[in-house]
Length: 141
Image (cartoon, rainbow, N blue to C red):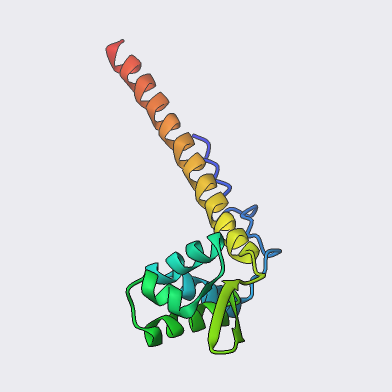
């Protein structure tokens, strides 16, 4: 019986390919995902996507203290997702210039990897079903 060929995704396969071309800045991704990990901060981004707002307005909308909202906005600002500008006594927030391209590319690379793995799993399941059918035909004869 001939040896079964290894899946292209199996690390022992000499043709196993890793995407070394895609390089990501760990610090940027860490800051972005840390900022996005909090529901309030995601809500702030959604709100700022509709219109610029003061920290006071955001604090009221999210029923939180001014100090708490300042901390959330600070995390978003450090990640480059929000910018603030102080005019007089009012600090206004707006979406930053970053469009999360690196983060989307990182997620997409994992989506593609998982899709390829599931495709290989589907092939294996189909092979096993065919083998099971063939074995059933042999036992009936």
